[in-house]
Every structure is written in structure tokens, then in C-alpha cells.
Image 1: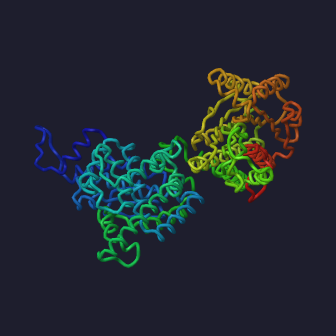
Image 2: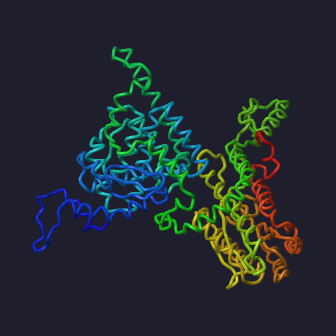
Length: 620
């Protein structure tokens, strides 16, 4: 929205505004209609990924059969909003309530998380208010990114209509917590007055092992599922603690003669009703959820991705549909890997102890206790009874803290046909597994005793020009890059110059060694694990050069694995020895790669032994 158009829009609500001489001003209704029509593009960009298209109409409605929906700014104007504030109100409803819910319901894991949230809200109605506050912040930040000229209107709505007061100390602490986060996020240049205990609770969440959990849970770019899980894990328990304190205060007041309510929730009924009265909503949330679910049933995955999604994510509807069609072929293989993820994460939540060296001063220990202490420590007992005279600390010397996987695919001319199909499915398996693993770690990071950073790189050889780097080594692995790699593997043209790709990786590693003094030490000690997986369907164009590059990388601490595809790929076993293997039946490639990846990830366990992760239910 341009500055000029925004001023015109605001002036619509002021009939006394003088007209520019010589310019014929159209009737207010006509100008209003023209302005909103111009803004439908932004509305549909915001709603695009959810599978809906919005048009101005009489009232608010959703047609699940087509995904078409209508919005009506009059709902907000009738409540005293200016025209531009009414536009923000429409944006808010669409982004904060419709799109966020639709994206969350877009995956099985998201659906499960949404159902758990509904159960929690049913048991603890106060969480309904918190989820509204959290998604309001998340959605409003997204709106001002799409339409930055609305920022003043967003602030005005919260400052003048929804939350004019800045002193929140008269409200229960758990509501002070929620309202403070909401108002200071939207109106950052005005401080609010809250109970010191509430302020301290917010301060702690702003620095959970260096991470601002509140910012992560309200980040407009954050995946809705991850944002919800962060809120559930770290923020909701804080709200519950404050709520319990508020209840105790209510009991004390009742004991002093103040009239009390029946159930605990009824004790705050007036406060909760006050919140609901401040937030007019044109769409019933339960009804919206039903319409979203029905719309998703009616539309295919590709149909749900509108032009707005393409613009935002840089990927076409067709490419995305093709990607997820192939993803379904390997989706089942992810479950074994998910078990590995879970066990790695659970291990890293357990404090690892060792016996400290005996000191000259201190209590003499009965030698009979040493054996029991050793057994307790090996069994994973966090605080063994015999540990009183021992020092507990983390053993971090050789536990992997960084993991990088560079996937190198084959785009040589011989890969056309069935080989290309199975290679693409294998690439999807690796990408989705590492993306999911990285997301799980992000979700659990604040609770890990020992952190783990996962990075990926995507490149290929055999293309015109020799090699291609699709994605440099980094933590991020967005959908656009995953789809680009998948799509690129359709192109098959050149020779099997895997040695060129290995040379580029070696150059990159040596560059890292030159720039970072700790890099070499981490590789040598095992704190940093770097893996290269090269896929190929046959003889290398220069086997001697491949062996040389593999040897160089391995001496630097990088593991290089060659995986042959098809019955003619046996040479891979010798070229990449001792880490060369073949998958003789090309259709078994995804399963072979799944097992390979499970073994590699298993080495990230606390002991470094993959078999430790196979012991279901046992603590390391």
C-alpha cells in the first residue's frame, strides 16, 4: 500500500477534508470499493498458502467446495474503526486465525498438535486467551511485513481500542503475563506496568540458554507447528505457575471475607469476559476450523498452493505437487529415522557424569562405594546416592556437537529413466529427514544438556558446466531449495565427474580450516562430524582422482561414502573403499539410503555407538 493511497484511505472517514481544487472526487462508497479492490492482492497473498481466495462481499463466509471466501470491513467500521483500521481488521482475521490454523492442519503432525491444544484449552480455558495473544502477535507481525504502511493503524487499534491501559497490575498475574507480551510487541514504544514477578518470568523466557523463546513462538516466519510446540513446552508452564499463584491469592481473599466463585476458572470469569469483549471476531473459530478441514478435503495438495504461495516461497504449484507426490513414496521410511531422532534428543537431555580426580583435601571415600558409583553412572542414574563425594560434570570432549551432511547427486547422461526417479526419491528422503531432525532439535534445544547443530549441503555433478551447487552448507533447508534440488535431478546430460564435486568440497573444507582455528580440532576430536554421501550409477570418469580426493578428505576428518545405484555400479565399492557400497536393485535405493543414514546418525549418540540407539527404552 503506497503512502498516498493510505492517506486517501484514511481521509475517506473525514467528510470535512477539503478536496484538491480541479479534481473531481468520486463518492465515498465508490472510492472505498476501488481502494479495497486494489488491496485484494495483498489479502490473497496472505491467504494464498492456506488455499483460500478472498473477495469483498456482504458478510464473512467460506465456500469449502471452491476455497472462495468473502470479507466485509463493515463489521469493524460499525465498531468504530476507521476504514484503514477496518482493513487491518480484515487482514488480522485472515492471517491470525484462518491462515495460521490452516497451515497447522496441513500436516498429520500439525493436526495432532492442534487436537492436543484443543484438549489443553478444554482443561485450562485460560490457554485460549494465551493462544489468541500469541497468534495475534505472530500474525500482526506478518501483516506489517506484507503491508508495512498499516503499521501505524495496527498500533492505533491496540493503543486506542483494544488495550488503552498501560498499568496491568490490577489483573491476575497470568493475564498480566499474556497482555504484557501482546501489547509491548504491538506498541513497543510504550512500557506497561506489571508485577515484578511477572516481569521476571518474561525476562527468563527471553533468555533460555541464549534463546528468546517468546520471540521464536511469535516469529511470523516460524513454522506454526514449531511455534506451538515451543509455546507448549516453555511458555504454558510459566502461565500455569502464575495461574496457581493467582488461585492462592483468590483463596486468601475469600478467607478474608471477599465473595468467592465456584470452580477455579469461575474465579476469573469477569477477567476472561473482559478479554473476550475487547476482541470482536466476525468469524466463529470453531466454524472456521470445520470449513478449513472441509476445504482441505475438497482440494488437492497442488490446488491449495495459490499464486500467493508461489510468490512468497518461490516455487511453482506443479513442482510442489510433483515433489510431494514422490515424497509419499518414501514417507514410510522416515519412521525408522524418527526413532533415531527421538533417542538422540532424549540422550542429550540426560546429564552425563564422571568421577572427578581425588583431591588432596576432602572426605576419604569408602572403596566399597566406588564400584556402586561406577555402575550407577554407567546406568545413567542422574544423582546416585554414592555420588556425594564425587564431582558431577558433563563429558563433552568427544560428544558430537555439530553434524554436517553433504549430499552429492549424479546428473550424468546415464542416469536418465528409472535411475533418476529413485535417486530423486532418495534425495527427498535425506532432505526431509534432516529438515525434520533439525526442526526437532530447534524445538528441544533449550532443554538439551548438550547441543547439536545439523547442517546440509546439496550439490551434483554430470551437468553442463561440470558441477552444480544447489544449496551451500547451512542449517536452513527451506521448501524452495528442496524442490529445486528435486526438480534439477531430472536433468541428465554430462559425464561422471564425481571427482570435481569432491575437489570443490575439499577446497571448502580447507577454507574452513584456514578461517577457523577450532574447526580442525573439532574434526579431529569428533565434536564435529562431517559426512559426504556421493550417489553414482557406475564408473567414475577418473577413479584415481576420486581415490585421491577421498583420501585427502578423510585425513582432514571428513567421512566420504560412495553409494552405487544399480547392477552396474560395483566399481563404487573399490573406488570409495573402505566406504563404498552398491545397491544392486535400483528400487531398493531409498531403503538402502535410509539404513545408511540411520547408521550415520546413530554415531551422534552420547557414546558414539549406533547400537546405543537401538536399545529401545534404555538410558545411556
